[in-house]
Image: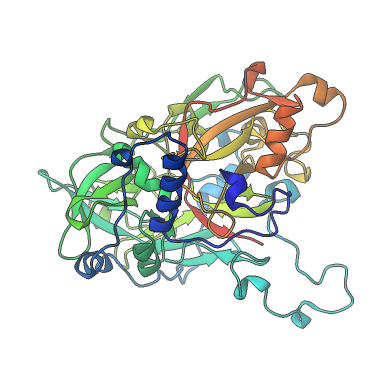
Length: 466
């Protein structure tokens, strides 16, 4: 279906159609499916507009845009990861997206490079007029970006677990209703409507906080990874995540008393009081909170999260990494193992009722030279130097209509023949990768057939860098 709503397939991804309403999107999909004789009308969940009363309930969820900490964050975890010889087993988020070299820093160069005029001469980016055009676009609008450190500070929510009343500290990043997304500044994802079977249930209280029916996370485990041999660090010889959810935990929650709207509400702390997780300036205790937390302030109700480099249709992006459906993936991603995510239907990206988009992850991309190598990419590089692998994601808002924060992991491996001929490099765009698969330059891991690797990652998009 991508060809029907993406105007081009070039690596630059220069022109994309604007997002349309979820009702229209589902209506179009429905009409196409029925006309092809593949579905019966009774099978299609028609999403009705929210009533003013229900929309008012969701409006209670809105919080003021979170301000970044006024004091300088110590970013202890990042500093440790840069200097430690055991960075693969450090707790916390790992290095941020502003790395020491071009292979670990995707922030675009200023427009003044190569000209005879200073940067102040240049006008506002075209994205100020049309968000699909060139220029930075902040997609998650609930907080302030710190471009110097590569973090975002967003509202922190305090909900409770039904029955026990235990504290559930969480954030909101995405929602499956466009009006709610616009009201709250969240990412809109129609696809989350089709992920309801992998969502917890809950209800909004009078203050706009969620009372969850089930789902807990243990943040006490210590994350640890032992890489494979040099040059073949992936797969690691040992890996265990730093936080583990129970069988009922997944980041999505369906709000039963407010029209079953689905939120992406990853948990960042559980069963702790505010004074136990008060780390407004960093130096976070990762036995109590999510590893991607750089700072957390339960007084001002904000949390600062690490951002991660990636690409979407040739454009550099920053995203969050919150949960994974496999323990290996959660260990590598510095996030939470979320067993309920295993119910997500994988391998059907862009087909009707798919809840996922694809994320393309190299296993053996260029790693020689580490961050100094502008072509650096892949899991072996990640495990060798501790910086992120520069993954490629599919559609995001402003570039496509089919964004989902649930990414179906598609691991790929360069063939030895491609490496021997010097073809291996950094890939930045989905259809480029698929073409290389077609041309037999890359395969699945170990020469397997390319496709879904059987796990998904919850990675909400935050910023398009150009």
